[in-house]
Length: 344
Image 1 (cartoon, rainbow, N blue to C red):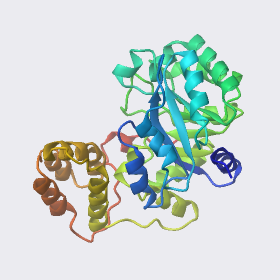
Image 2: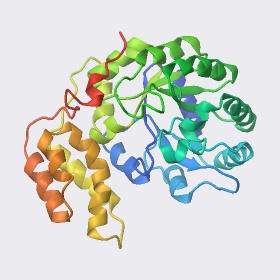
Image 3: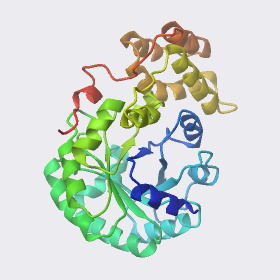
Image 4: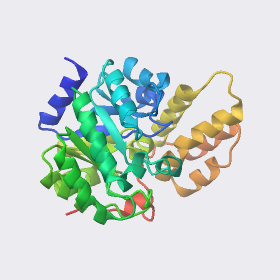
């Protein structure tokens, strides 16, 4: 069965679909390999392919498709605003075993949105309209979109929904914050529920999915077809299987401190780049530790951010995690993920 057929069958099946959110320079092929060993999602998204005038799909991102070790479908995400280039790259990407072509309308990084790409396109609805029309003509497999609620205000979402309803896209993933909001508190799950009610295509909810119980409540409260998880899955790679257990009515299994320590060691081994100096390798790992540390007792993140050598890195990890106590790996009660509650 071809990847796009597998993906389409997932969307038609009964169980909620769990997916790994695309996070640039984080959810790489190497991370896919690691997270798959912990149960993993039902479908993966690539990092975004940067599309401009004469661009071609980046090889290291293509590796996530051509060397996909997970046995699960992978969706190719593009970012850009050049319509001919987007069409050309979409056609190129369809020559690979991809499950769908996804358009990024949500990246909140200033370096991206200032170029009218990613979330920046939400300020130019006529351009989005033209892009979706051109891509729908060029894409013969599922065409999906990942969006935020708007650029400045959630009030912009109403117009976006009408635009998405106009084009026969196959899935809409909604990160229910605005671009200007970045990752601050205030996820509007009620607007995700509105999208699920009003659109003719399936909808995935994205934004601060951080526990199995909260995921179950979010699915029930919004009526979405699935969830997309990013930071929560990096902090807790067991989360996908924990959600599956919760939905079966079982008690999710929690990892011990030593389990988390083993996960960190796996990440380290997967992220080693030959010839890179030690301090750079430690700095690379801190990108992951910023997420993992949010689920460990507070002094850990403070300490790990200050290490610069391999010995200090693992010494700090062992000091806080070399134990058999079970860890929920949920954000602290006053953190941004914890204050966002699912819609009732």
